[in-house]
Amino acid sequence: MEPASVRFDLGEYEWLAERNGILFLGHTDLGVVEFLITSEALVELTDQDVEGIDRETAIETYAEFESDIHRIARREFVSRLGGEPPILLSAADVAT
Image (spheres, rainbow, N blue to C red):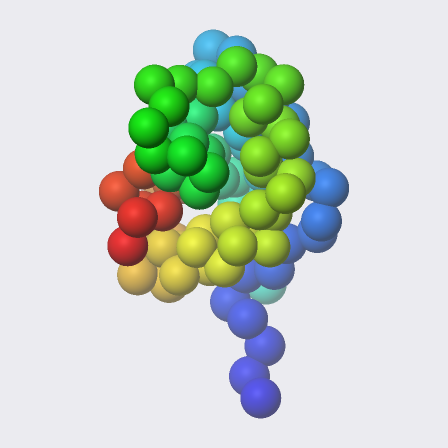
């Protein structure tokens, strides 16, 4: 089996208030890649009827769905051929 193009460490994330999302890091053979998942995307993982979520709920949601988020990030990284960091994961990326 071929190794993943980008790897993630569980628990390696932080809330970025100015971006209203969670920044997490991916590791490639060429170095570290920043990813940002928006709070709107995190809402899509839980209850689509909610308008938005606060910082604490966003962090809890990220921690709960971290493995799924890493899978989505890996898929998007490959489909975008890397891209400019941070790679933004929006509600559209989570819904697909």
